[in-house]
Length: 69
Picture (spheres, rainbow, N blue to C red):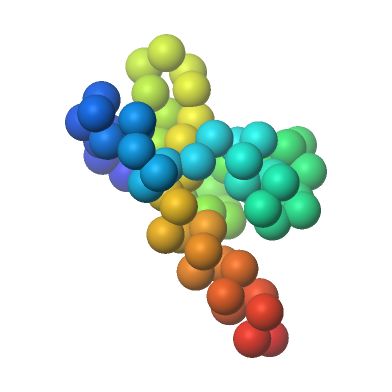
């Protein structure tokens, strides 16, 4: 997990919800949850409210790497 972003940062396009990541990557929500549990996959943050957020740049890097493979 990363450091918590400033609240205003979550209002920008810099962060994505698990549902948005699932749509972009075609990974099931449960796969993302399993990867978090296993400590593998995309870096994420978990807010004190329990909400999970992924950095858009990390998702884009995954997608560009997957496209190149």
